[in-house]
Amino acid sequence: MIEQLNSLNMSLIVTAYTQEGIVIGADSCITTNFTQEGKELYKHSHYGNKLFLLNKKIGISTCGDAIINGILLSSLIDQYIWSKKEENITLLQVEIDLKNIVNNQAKGKEYHVIFHICGYENGKRYVSKFDNNDKESHIKDVSERDGCIYDGQVDIVDLFSQDVAYRGTDGLYYDINIERCRYNELSLQETIEYVYFLISTTIQHMRFTYKKDNVGFPIDILVIMPNESLWLQKKELHIPGNY
Image (cartoon, rainbow, N blue to C red; front, side, top):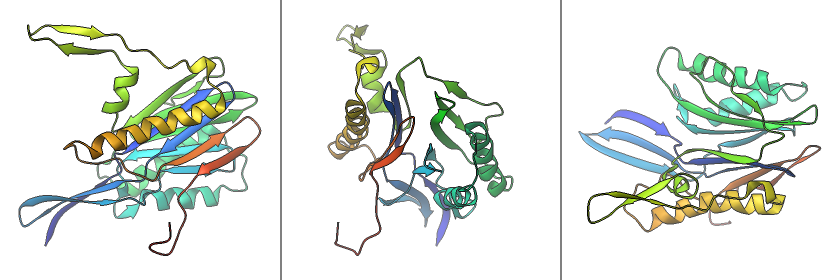
């Protein structure tokens, strides 16, 4: 008998924005933690959808809770996208709507979902990083600033972008100089490769360690440019064994 069930897509989502466009990447692993006969167990699915395109112009990615009160979050987002397909919707409205979708479905229970949304409006590039419990908007105009945001299982990615120190045999900590990514010089193709690198490196690192593999292939990649968008890589339905 299953006593407790909790599904997370704690995985990894990455959004990089450089001069030629925005690249969003997400892995596909969903981890279901559950207690059975007093034992803590977990199962993996590698078919979780965490990356979405709204009206061919707004990218949406998620990590955190993957099932909200018994309903897949991906299903809720798919329904939302279908309901808005004829609307000229703004990023601000999408941010508000996504919070409401999670919180209304939660029906008073506690859930935590992190969202990235991004796109172009009136010739300007915008990115937002928020969760369903945020009360304020986090949409930022990043037209004049190149960079990257990421959430989920971030410990490996942090090694490439955060200050790092090691502990010497004397017990003292010594800073390690990390070469930061040169976002302002990246072409769109290099930005795509960078996003893929961050997610795939995290997956491969977990493969060779005892860390629970909360991040897994395949990797979905979406590109949004000022006048168009395209899926570079997206999971497709298939007959078992046909990949």
